[in-house]
Length: 262
Length: 274
Image (tube, rainbow over all chains, first blue to last red; front, side, top):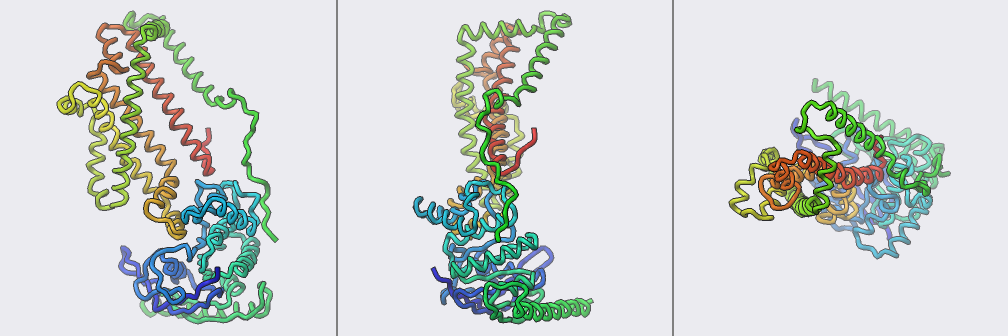
């Protein structure tokens, strides 16, 4: 299954809360080619996660819309799978049960299901843990199960919501290479949200920098460094430097705004 | 390079566990029972209340008499049958009510105070009305059992369903699950430990309501046996039946609920320490 082209058109989201309305995202326009790996980076509270929820269809946009291969998307669908920050594995199922969850929902026949689950557990190197329970897994292993659970459904779009933020540095770097590898094999269009500029620079073909609340596209950087990449690549270092400059300016600007208001 | 776990997860259990090992946690429980009976016997031997307070041997003898006349067996069978039917029906109705309360939040908010009120309403107070409606029948006993527990069950079930982390529902909806599929595949299993506690609450309500109703009227059953022993008066018989009622309560609680709850918790790695 090939990836899908995504188009975000004038996408905006406001939340109604107790202390009035909060604008999380404003007028986000973005075109993503099929099979592209785009990272979205921005200060905390810039609406990065909201952006993914809108693309996943788990929340409705206040303004604008999302197109997949030229068609508007409505509601959630197994063609756009999210990998959540804390894996969101189901503790009442074992590893196999978690990975085959979406296949069961889609009523995939048992033999086909078993075969696909086994194959995907092998790609994330967890075949020995097929019947382990969720609480027996480490953080990195949980995220690998979450990746297998997502990719087994052959999604056309993979949405990753700070999936490695809670992991140790060492495991995070290892997971970054796992993701690059899986992305190249699956061909899924990937939107990867992170607050870690270095992670964004290593993984993305393009790095979308969002502004502080409300989140707007501040700048888009390109990264042409060959894969697999590491933090040491000069091209990656250059992207990190420029992203940091933009983000610093963003933070300064928003601080000044606060001062002006006071 | 791939992160290696420190050790393989402990999945296999020790296969050479004997039956005695399986029931080792019952040892303190049995010890308490033995001590209680000994203390009871000593108090009786002291002779403070005389014949109004029979000892363990008298009570045991009364139970043997009941048993030999098959009255005890028939009483236990009748009561347990009513309990099973009544409790199951109250689980089904309670689940339905809970589902409606959670699914339609405004309805839930509106009805919750009344259900809470009805939950505290003494179930025995339903008996006069039930007698008029259904007469001296099995239906009356079932009605009181159900009405005495269904409100407690529905409140507890609703609370259990509300404990399901929204993230699980998001993840499941994201993978294409919705409607009934979502409820059966995610909501129920996610809430299972709480649902079992809720059922446990319901069972104790049902048990109390049923015995109470049987005391007021019935022609067979533990409540009836208790009442008829009292009118003789057969003091040892009364205490014997009371002990039988207590033991049934303990056995149901241990076998039906405590075991299943431990099982559900162990699967998620939430092992309660003993």
